[in-house]
Length: 237
Image (cartoon, rainbow, N blue to C red; front, side, top):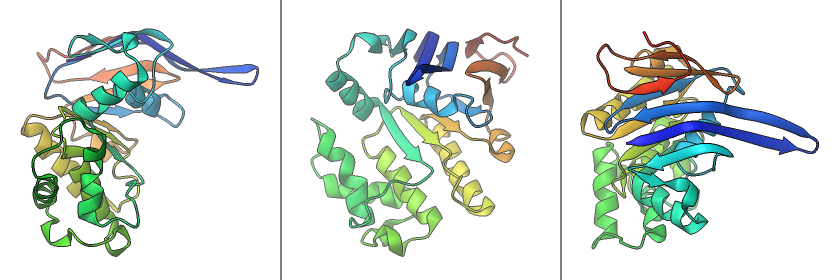
């Protein structure tokens, strides 16, 4: 369970302050599949960064499985990120001199409890995303869709409970993007919580839960009937 209570975030630039998030209250149960949408500057990526413990709110509180992240040290947050979250970015963020297998193995450098056979675990993840035969290819030798699949394998390799994807199809053509979203939906059906930041309507149409932000606030909220997920600040349909 991910719980945000009246979360706010302010960025300061010289004498100017920008309120990126205002009073965001959200309870997200395990196995949820959520899309966060909104125009540029609406606070989508800021919210995702706070959920993934890459950033801290300046107001409110955030709990992950009952743990108050506000009381954690930076090292504690780093350990929580590595244990609970897998990250996927629009630009893939693969190291160009490392092959696919080596890129997938990178999270093991930051965990205190690596698998007994890290290389085989990483290879299994590449098989899972359909790239077992590309394990020794460099990122420059892979298509955009294949690079994103490597990034997904890297996000999965520590078996996180939550997958956070920031515009994961933004650098891909529509057909390849659809394949990536279908892969994320499959992971959700297998038990992962998946949160996608996107501005593409064809992606949000595939997500059962859609949170719309505007100027750092909740502007709209769509969920299936009789669902238990809750958001404050907007009338629920």
